[in-house]
Image 1: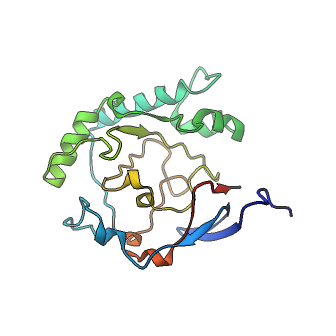
Image 2: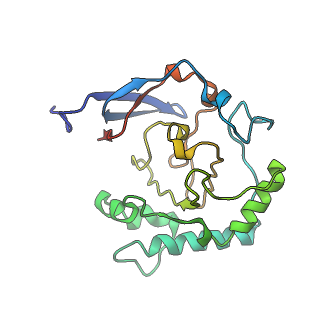
Length: 217
């Protein structure tokens, strides 16, 4: 079978999520990381937390009413991105409404589902709640860019609607921050954000990662 990107080196990835095998082909120039651990070198907010070794935790952030307000906002936000919106739409049925890849890509686009964090109806609550949890004032602003953004992640069941395995810390502007993943609808073992516990403690030398311009099939 001919390569989709004959000018770029090909890498065939095989990995499992919850014992379910996944395969992905990546095209691009790659290199191995240095013999160092970025977690030990970076200023971070979690090094004193009880879950620092695992690298993540689950927190109750919203009351039922607050969660419903956030979900309604996200539903309206996604709906306005659909060219021919249905009369009855829910996030749970997104994959039935947008069942073709070209329709999904038209909705998500490149940064199409990102917007200013100030549009979130619960922003002050989130900042206050997390500030209490970490015992320090926090702001939803990227210190490298001075910009605060949120992103809505739409993953259809049994589709490759997610990024290849990666670490956000490899992107300079995403360092020294905390990522929040807030599941709103249909988040289960087939669609939720996959994490590899303790991988932030690994030496960079075990990773082979692609450089700018890499593509997936």
